[in-house]
Length: 303
Image (tube, rainbow, N blue to C red; front, side, top):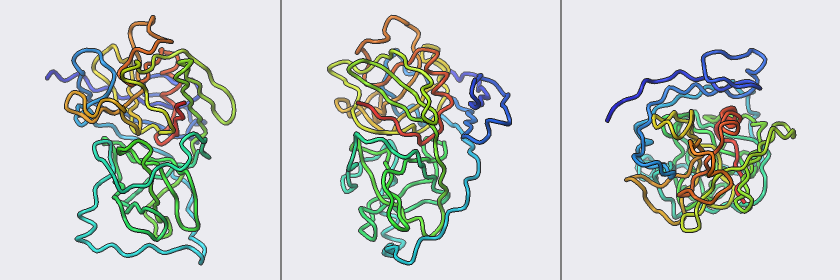
């Protein structure tokens, strides 16, 4: 397999450029420093596969403010023995979590709050309930950032990147080992109109016609999130591939991988506005440039 040159890319600022320059006034938001090798997927199909595993990207984010300790009313988690901890599955795009609860409100917007585990965190079915998984520090060699969808004293419920789609779980934040930040972006995809709309701090940045899944391989509905950022070597995908925390509902595997759905560019401009992909969302260049500024963990609502 031929390796492509590894680009150094910073995604930041109100007018992003793929390069090494950034503006100091933009450092209030996330920056993505992508140093990734990404294997081409053969023919130009759109559901990501296990070749994501050969990618390597790093993401830096500003240090969020310190998180206040939980109130005395917080429910404490049950201690997890080391042998039981080792048996818990890691929640990644490659795993299935049958014991994880489902997203209780898959069509609702979120507050934009996102969470990063600085150490591996136990995921619980409910506050003080049984453990169901472990949330690792990285996903696809990028820092793990997941959206918060509910809050209880000392606890945050987050979306998870594993199957089934809409898997969720609770993280105890009273013991440290987590960082929290807030994404100012809101990303919406309407599969009926095949439209992507991006907002920043309540202001509409743009709306574009995109390509979505074909009837036999539809783009999955519900809220998900930006899981990682990788640079493809296949030029037809544009400058960036953004794997999401969701999977094809008709393809269990693809090209030896987990059929992870992603956003990426496309070389044929005539496909935008059409249901033609294997589940991924194909973006025009202008939309991809805007999405390059969206931080990891930002929710994506697909309807």
